[in-house]
Image (cartoon, rainbow, N blue to C red; front, side, top):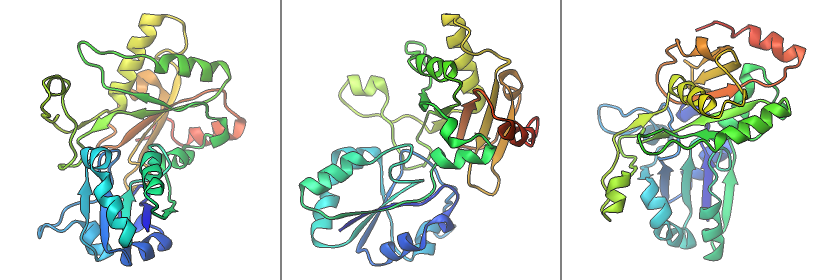
Amino acid sequence: MLYVIGLGLGDEKDITLRGLEAIKKCSKVYMEAYTSLLSFGITSDGLSTLEMFYGKPIIVADREMVEEKADNMLFEAQVSDVAFLVVGDPFGATTHSDLVVRAKKLGVDVKVVHNASVMNAIGVCGLQLYRYGETVSIPFFTDTWRPDSFYEKIKRNRTLGLHTLCLLDHFGLDIRVKEPTLESLCRGKKVYEPPRFMTINTAIEQLLEVEQNHMESVYNEDTTCVGMARIGCEDQVIVAGPMKQLLTIDFGPPLHCLVIVGDTHPVEEEMLEFYTGSK
């Protein structure tokens, strides 16, 4: 059996009872460590807080392992119970459909244990979930690569009066997470990027640059947005205001996300008032 278990957004205690029970009966536990970040630290004796809380050694599965070497884990799941831990929900912002498909093709039974994801936790800001349009991802710009396909999606959402959740690029957030450089891939040898994550400030700068290039008035520096950092953690930060105001705020450590606000219901406006200008 392969258990695909969501861990939630905050820390090791956010796991569900069903998920914890599954982990305790598994012979091996893998932790997906490239699509998101939990506030799980490393103690002085080298054991992660996860391992201490769950009472199991954890094998960190980076992108390369999951995408290229997952069959080893699936072969183990053919003869024993194996857990694959995922930050948030297994089918939330980043799906793991490919892993499930490969498991089923090998005849491995799969059981999914759900948990909170950024896709529903953003409701904390007061904007109603059913009033969101298509979610977009904002990648890091480089000198030679400045993609803007998200612009048309934001445009469609705003034309319909819908809110837009912007998921911000990040890689290498765990010291063991690896993202190869473009140059190294061209040379056929993987050299990995240093850790970094996109801040709300950088996302807004890039969004405004794209608007300036297109000049279709989809949004501007006065457009109301909600910046959210570390949703689900004890120190989460939520600030609502125009883009130009959010540019000046230090939201602190990762992970960050941004919502471009569409048409609002009176109740939504009341909720946003609690976060306007707050930090």
